[in-house]
Image (tube, rainbow, N blue to C red):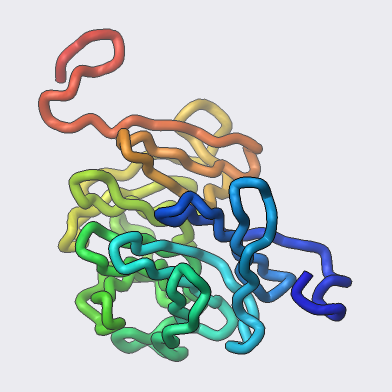
Length: 237
């Protein structure tokens, strides 16, 4: 429990992340907090009250710097903590400019510590350095390949490609580091490879791609194949 008033609300977990000590961080939009759980399920930390957290959504952890990033969709900011719970600061404000946000949702961190932010209301992906300075952005509202309508999930593979799940377009698009579109996967439907309101995407250490396919009530799993990787069934690309 965070306090008596918040304990009367029903939990609504939104985001999840695992730190270098395998502690689990969960953002809860209705309890206006981020909770850290140990492996036994015990609550170790509750973050957000002193910062006035309103609607925490995406979480990302920089394991090298021991940092936790939290996107707050209603504050239009990124809240930064260390993984022991100390508050570091906030990045951004509402707006369309560099390092400004409009309903940011999900987050990802690359191997250099740069933060990728799904700036949903601005229809773009923003990339910030470890100090919160804007490096670049890509995307715009539209209906052409590479455009966004309701970007939500984001993930990076082992080669630094950027995957963005779009809930309205029922697909995920794959970009290079410079924001150039490489491929898009999916369409609306119920067959394998089709989606209905995909919300989140995650890539594990083996480049398996997990997509939360909300209205189809399933998680779909894909495999990224590097050059020279053997395809399923023993066939080389």
